[in-house]
Amino acid sequence: MERVLAYLKKNQPRFVEELIEYVSIPSVSAQPTHKPDMDRCARWIAARAEGAGMTARIVETKGHPVVLARTPRRKGYPHYMVYGHYDVQPPEPFELWKSPPFEPRLKGKILFGRGASDNKGQHMAHLRALEAYHNTGTELPCDISFLIEGEEEVGSSNLATFLKKNRRELDVDAVVISDTGIPRIDQPALTYALRGIVAFEITLHGPNRDLHSGIFGGTVENPAMALSQMLGGLRNNEGKITIPGFYEDVVPLTKLEKQEFAKLKFDLKEYKEFLGVPELFGEKGYTVNEQRSARPTFEINGLTSGYQGEGSKTIIPSWACAKVTCRIVPKQRPEKIREAVVSYLKKVCPPTVRMEIKTGHGGEPYLFNPTSPEAQAGLNALRKAFKAEPVLLREGGSIPIVNEFKHILGADTILLGLALPEDNAHSPNERFNLECFEKGMLMSAYLWRGLAKANGSR
Image 1: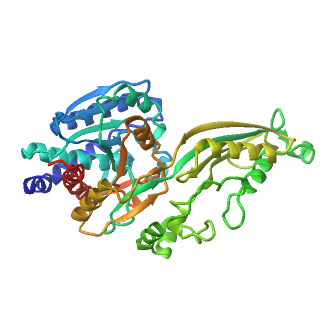
Image 2: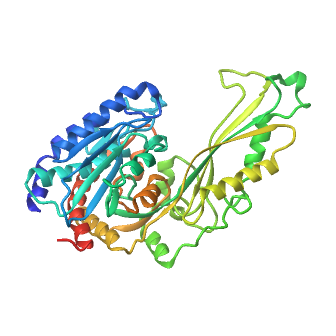
């Protein structure tokens, strides 16, 4: 093991240089113009997997390719899989970036660039640990596969089909994902629960064209006003969602969970300054950390209607549209929440407009037993790598594919994130702390021995 750790330390400068190269590839899955970049990125990561001693292949899908790499399969050894994604969020708006999103900028121990944290740097930490085992001739205590996809940021619509077609090859004991976060550099975490998601697009149609607000104003419904009133009534002053049945399946936090939340180091003033808000707002009766990870939400992601250009234009818009997502917690079901939301919107929609609802992507919440042997192996690996006591964490975000791993492969997922709250995932000036990158490699190196022991092997 000492040789593995020494290799990781010695090769840090090269690892950072190659991460910069990886982040510079504009692998934006949501934008068709980047299809050549997506293909180039898949080839890039496949080549690095082969350099770490794995056999890699690029598998085409109806969308972007999947990279599947694996160490030689050995009889009697447990088999674990690392999942990650090489695609990234669109970088717009460009004007809010302090440096170009695909020209990575290194400032001290911070690497700025789209995809640095979400998710290129995080899964690269695991790949480097595997490289260290291979290049030092140190035997791996378990067999390992890597599955790096190119559609996570657009819903992973083709991955379930891929898993089903490759079910036999992906006969794994568990999945390891580093695509979540930790509260602080001195407080690593194992994430045992994720919120699910349900997406909608709500459009109200009014007059058959934009109307002169002076000539027609006061005689027809303004779709923008009607939509605003409808949405505004879906939440009360205490932060509660007013949709009937919305909280019906929510399970209260256990004593252990409340104790873990209490361990989180949290500075209210620092948090407000980081977000740039004068005051916080959330569901009454819960702490900030509980609100953002253990409670369901109804969020307006975008509102569009009427004239958006420079200056004024005195119209009544013919339509108004809102993009909405609900984050849901363990035991809530996406289809049940979708039905409740649609039913209530139909009830409160005025007869003066016509409503159209398009249902978007959805994903179930996820819950993993934090007291299992696999969870303890993850916590021990974090403890050794970060030299700090880890905490158990609920994550407010969603990774829908973890439920596919459970349903299709029968495998639980161990979530060992390396991102910090200030890493600006999905936002301008995304960044990755290279200290997390270094400690992530150590964590991965320790993890495989711990998981093999938890499995009862070697």
